Length: 522
Image 1: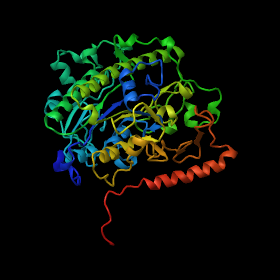
Image 2: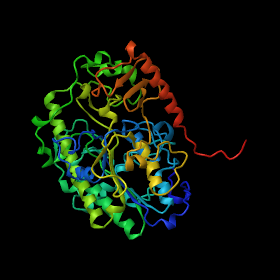
Image 3: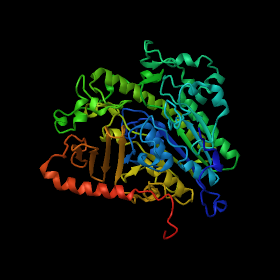
Image 4: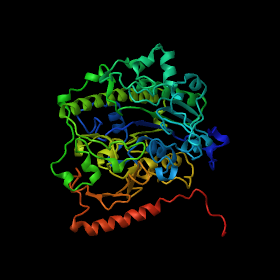
C-alpha cells in the first residue's frame, strides 16, 4: 500500500503571506451519518437537539443543502477533495478513494494548520486486494496493535483516530476499541456483533447494552476536544473533522435514549396513493413484496434495491430510536461547542454541521436509503456558525453542496482554490445570502452500467436521468414539494424538460477540472 505520509508526498500549497495572517480561522467540521434534514429541533418540535438548535441561533441554517451522492464513501471523499465522485474516483461504497488524490487536509496542513479526523472515515472498502489495499477492512479493523502505532498522516489529516462501525456492527475496533479497553471495558467485543460473523446469533433490537460512557459519540467528542487542545498547544490553527456515526442504522441506542421518544408520537412519511403510477420502474419495484431487481444488480448488489414494504408499528419504533440516536449525538456535540467557549476559541472558529446524505422514514413508501433521488435522500441538514462573518439566527435558501466545503475552507484560510476542486467558494452566500451557485448535481453510480443515475436541481426544478434508459424523473419543487407528480412523460412539460436538459449539459461542462494550468502553446 502507498500511504501519503504528510507533507513530503502531499501536494504543495502556494500561500502568499501565511505568516502575516495570525487570525486565520480555525475550522471545525461536525458531521453525522445518514441524517434526515428534518431532524433538528429548530424545525421539528418532536425532536430535542439543543446543541444543534444553539448553532442555528448563533449561525445560519441552510434549507437547500444537498449531498453529491446519497451513499457514504463517495460523499465523504467529496467533502475532503472538493470533487465529485466521478472525478475523485471513489464512485460508490466498496471503492477506495485513491491515496494520491489531493485533499483539503493536504493543502491546509502545508499552510500550517493542524489537521485531524476523529470518528468515521469510510474512504476505503471492507475488503482489500492488490492495487486497492484498504486499512478499513477485517481483520485489520480489530488489529489494535496496528492502530496503536498508526495515527496518520492519512488523506491529508496529520492525526487520525478512527472507528468504522455503526451501532453494534462487527466492524468495531481501531482507535475506538483501544479507547474502550484503556478506559475500563476490556470485554468491549461482547457488546458488538461477532467477527467472523455468526449469522445465527440473535441481533440486538433498539436497546443497546453498551453503557453510554463507552458510546462512540462520547469517544468522538472527547477525541475531538483533545485534538483541538493539541493544536492550541502547538499554537497552530486547526482543521478538525468530528465525524459522528449516528443515526445510521441499525436502530440501536443505549438507555435511557432508547425510551426517550414514544413511537406513538412519531410521524412517518407517507406514500401518496397513485404517485408511483408515474414513477420509474426502479422505484415502483420497491412497493412489491418480492420484487425482481435482477436487472439492477451486479456482483455486490445495491443498497435499497429490495422491498421497502413496512409495517406502521415497526417504522414508528425505528423512528423513535433514530431520534434517540440523534439526541444522544447532540449531547456530545454540545460538549465540543462548550469546550470552544471555555478555551476562548469560538469567535475565531468556523463551525459547520451537516451529514453525508439523507434518510427515508416512509416517504414515497421508502425506508433507509437507496438509488432514489427524492429530497429526503439527497437534501441534508446544514448549519454554519462564524461569529462576525455569518449572520446569527438566519435561515438561508441559497443552494449548498458538500462538494463546496473544501474550496470554501481554502478561501477562508486565505489560500488559492486549487484547479482540481470542482466545488465553489460559498463564503459570499454564507455571509450575505448572495448565491454562489444556481444548481446542484447529485450522482449515484452504484454500478458502472446497470445502475447509474444523475440529478440536476435548480431553484425550482429537479430532473433525474438514468444511464441507458429512456425513463426519468422531473419534479416542480415549488408546486409539488412532496414530489408526487412526476412530469417526465407529460406532453405539457416537454419544453420544460428540454430546457432543463440543456441546463444539465451546461452544468456538466462547467464542472470540468483544471488541475494543471496551461503554460505553453504546445
